[in-house]
Image (cartoon, rainbow, N blue to C red; front, side, top):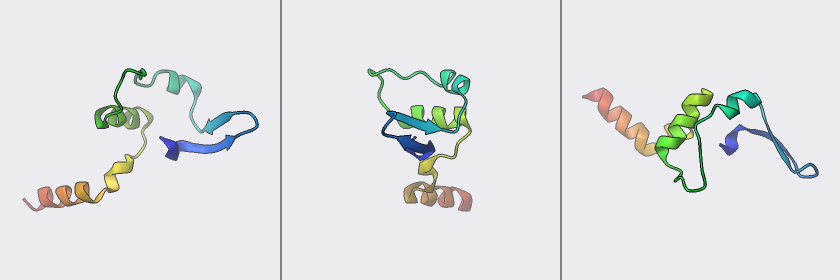
Amino acid sequence: STQWIERVSWNELKVFINMKREVIKRSPNFTEESLLSRTYETSLHSHYGREKYWSAEPAEREHEAEVQHQ
């Protein structure tokens, strides 16, 4: 996720994030043939223990509120 980027070095052509290389190597596989889906994103966020950016989307909040009231 772009939200995980700490800084970009245009001179070095590098993107810096605060994660260990080994954790990244064990992440769910992605290929160019894969479609970026909510399921894949969910697996990535779970793997890295990061909050889902879509958890604050209005439709999801409304659905959660409806479920809680039932």
